[in-house]
Length: 235
Image 1 (cartoon, helix red, strand yellow):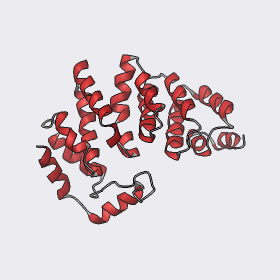
Image 2 (tube, one colour):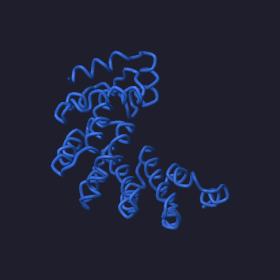
Image 3 (cartoon, one colour):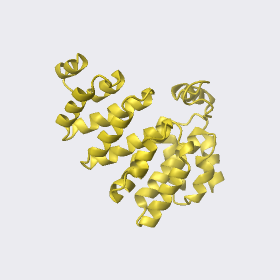
Image 4 (cartoon, helix red, strand yellow):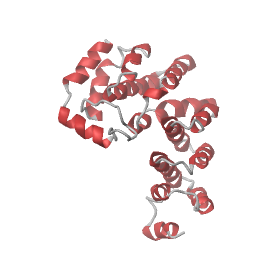
């Protein structure tokens, strides 16, 4: 069955679109996506095929998909894994999925793979357990994708009205060198600001303005009124 889904994905491949995706996901030598292989499928195309196979494949079956050098295969594995987590009814099932995710974290190696999965799997799992040490360990790992996973996983926390963990992780990674972390931090702060955390976020900006990267600031204040945005940019 796992070979069948690969064949179904390969049937839709497009060399022209693959080249475009490689550029978009920074696949040149020296860029963060270097060495990745693309077959040119859009995310909706992958998701449509996953619907046909998600009930037939076990978590174990997803190993060959998530460890494949083809980017869209890994995206398919994570799409199915998210679906399985949402359908899981017991802690044993959820733990199996989380363990699989963490075991294969080195293959979750671009921002789309991170963003389509972690806040649907790690976020709810550790939020429900009220145990955040694993996510903090990822944040301190000095491994780009693990760090982004830690930040984006907190989106589930935010959507459930808990902001403390996000502020802790953002503070930990605030002076990170990579713009993918700057963007992730700003995105999470903006999500808090959009909810009930407006004052907390604005106080956080004022407190940390001297060490906050410009990209993080711009992402954070994106939804503010123009006058307010200018005030923070001028700080």
